[in-house]
Length: 157
Image (cartoon, rainbow, N blue to C red; front, side, top):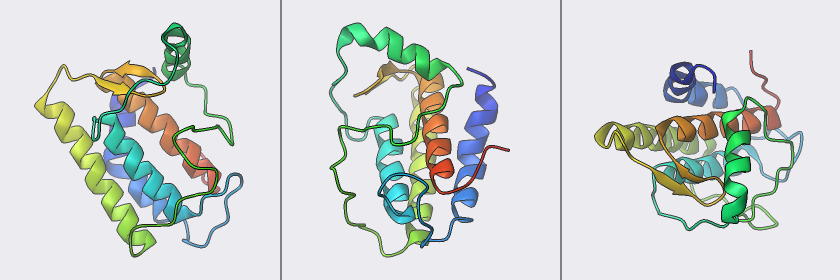
């Protein structure tokens, strides 16, 4: 994992402003979610990253070491990476607007950092990647955020 503090700063300060550069009517380069559905998906993913709500492991235990090696790498998620927790068709949006969704995502990111600030040795069980500490949680959120930014045409600078 390269430069964890830079990735944390990105998530704290740079991610949601980048999302606001995406028009709510932008078509994805892959997948079925529109921008607001993607942001609402990310809200759930960030909440999952600090254990709200808790999830059970769905990846077989003998696969966790290998999948965590991927997580520790700088390799990207591939377009159309399957997520067995999501339905085949995207869920209807819950929030009133794209801007409200992005604002809610920033609040959830703040909650994530507060949770780990309050409990320095916190571990959260991710259903796909197993037990994650702060560093692995940052790595996952960073990879996941860039996966969806690329989905809507933004690239890592």
